[in-house]
Image (cartoon, each protein chain N blue to C red):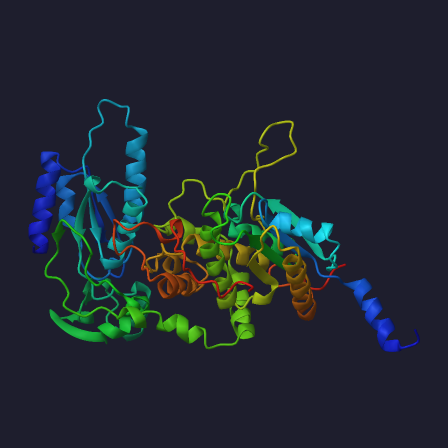
Length: 155
Length: 348
């Protein structure tokens, strides 16, 4: 209790928590996140979930817009290849996000803030793991200022 | 065919009513610049100019022309006629992109191919002429594929070699000759094009920098952008009638609802908004940009846009083995997929 290091960490956590936007597909990843909740798995409360009907519905602009509006990390998850409810939506998405990741890399935008993965409806643990990992990565990087236009971290 | 024969042919076709119009280059108001010639008068065809100073990509005029014609398609007076268009190698790739996307029908085109050893950068030539010429009479300027000359008592005096006034953007050209044409001006260029594997040396060189250096470079570039949308308006691949990135009126979807149309970007020109604009535009051009360099020429702030778009062309080439506009029959790259597409950017 009296360890100054422990107290300062706690204060820091009060000051800044990463905001993570997760775009989850309705049929697999959202159900996966639901399973993580139902199974009472512990994962950071930094994530805000937005449900989309398919990862192929996602426009890369959504990710850029999320960063612009102050997200510190963005996650996109869809069904595993072959499991897509719309047969192939996730395969189109894969190409788009490969390019987006490449552009981020080329421009020198912190690539670690963006995570894409496949999460099936039965992979609650995997979803919790991904959120934990992205949160840790973003926490190490600090607040996102490149695309949000913020000069300093806000609450 | 020789230039004179082509002018005669086009004039003849125009007077017979076989062509709607001719789109090419004509002399500008000074000897360094060419401007577009758009005419349906046979006598004006004589003004066509095939020199390496005609740099503009004229494909946009075709898109506009075809769109106008489609709007008039219920008019019984309206007849289908092709339009003649002068294209260089990279412009013919842009035409292929438009043909792939079914924006223009091939039968409405009469393509006049122009073999190209690279074009002149008119601004460079003008600056060199100002610093080196003895006589400031612009009537004495001659520019051709040998270089920049001044006429002195009827004799040509060389002021600059061709390499000094040529446009560096064409050093990575893959198609010196037009890919498809109905008639060709002169003889095809025999030079070997740049090898496919070596065409992105500029992007590779830029990628040598660290991510921090790259971002400080690009954030500086984006901060200068005034969002005039010249790059979008000049781009042959940016063929949407309404651009999702450049809407300037805010209209409620219905009067009562608070829901408004989606606006991706604000009108503000801060670095973050500008960066979003350019990232979005670059993504829209993935597998469609043919590196003709019009965006950079149109940019009033001198932002190296081509480097950004070429980084995506490089990705598309490396990952999906595709080059934009090489084949008018190919399906655009982002409208298809492979089961084995790369996943290394994803989380295991």
